[in-house]
Image 1 (cartoon, rainbow, N blue to C red):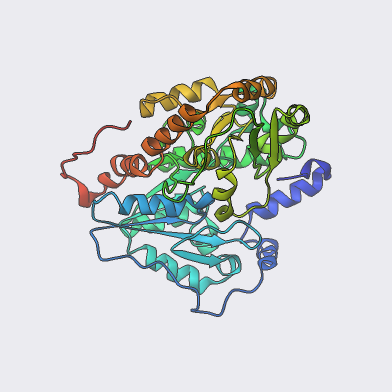
Image 2: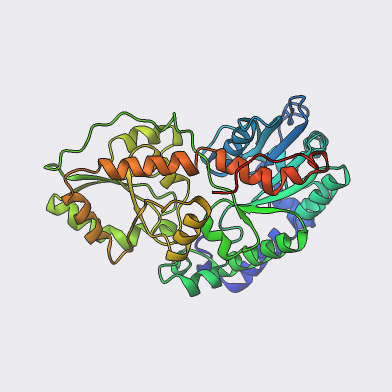
Length: 413
């Protein structure tokens, strides 16, 4: 998906055909690049506690959210054993999961694929993340075929869309002048094809589906927003209030700079740093476990500038007591207020206004009130209770074993 605009058209066509035909001879040959699977039987499969409801969330665990949602469901006090299975991608950020599956085993070990399918068949519910097949290349690596096979065993299946998998570039470019799909490093044709295919899969599935960030409701208006979850204790860092005579401490941590919009704002940030208005720390390639320490020393964290929404990084920063600055589209802010009853406390800025907003923050004698409002928002919306309630009301309670159960849950807020 990156730098493919520089390739000849026939090369891109070939790459896409291989990706779209994983069971073809060339597709099977391409899968060998992932390496040899672990010795047969050595990679574990999912095991549930003996409870009435058993939920599996798999297989990507982006930003640790699959695990976080599982723990939120278990903490809901509703007789749920929830587990997360995730692909362990070498070189990527690793997040804790109940079952971590080596990439080569996920793709190239039919024995593990069958064993994990059998294990998942013991669940009452399976939540498939990012429209990726939970069981590797089983059943032709078809997500819909794997979902149908689970349903045939009495399992209730739902989907969780995470972002790029359903964010339609043509729509995003039309609605957002700052869209990252304008960046030449992003290969838009493939992103458009994949998002359109996944949107059709969800719309045609007849199953419940959810989105992890509120902007995705533009692409999937029939979905339910299930907020991302953070561990409040982990991000409860010790900090001292900023001395207004000192420069504003600003951190920007772009996981992918083209998507976050780093190049758009860097000139303004460098000007402010040269004037002594801010100190600037650009963070990249830092594992998640190191981020609480970094946020503890930051007054302001600059988040997304191009997508028009917010995600895990912004929530973590607010939980740590940072003031978050970013671009969140007006209709997305309205949607958040409608679902939660609260205004999103992220300071609105675009590449055109970021310098002005940072100067204004630097001139404030105290950021304590802004910090407190951000932390209260996270505690209300992103501590797991709302996510568990959304999944329960719009999916888990619909399972036959739950029919007739009187719900005492409050409405989505």
